[in-house]
Image (cartoon, rainbow, N blue to C red; front, side):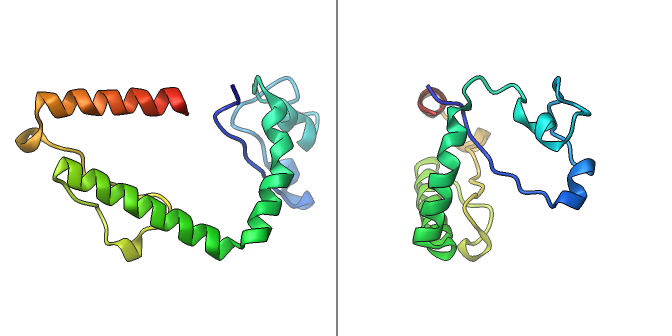
Length: 128
């Protein structure tokens, strides 16, 4: 099973001495690369995918990828809002790839819905 995620960070050389990871390890004080090379990831293989991810980003284009992610998030948000009889916190044109959906409150919250939410949460955690 792969790690939960992977990131790519570019820091201009003149700012590297001021930039440190949030998780400090044995490389602290030994230079920029040494500080970031091992921050506790158990599986470093996710870093092998960075070049491929950058190539995909360049192939499809940032605008197309952002538009796709926005539409997918909006579709999911609307689906949840409808299922929970709630609403999105902002209009679609103010959203990017993340959005907030009001969760059911005491007025429209049932034990059955609570059980379904717990099942969905556990499924999402176990699959990701």
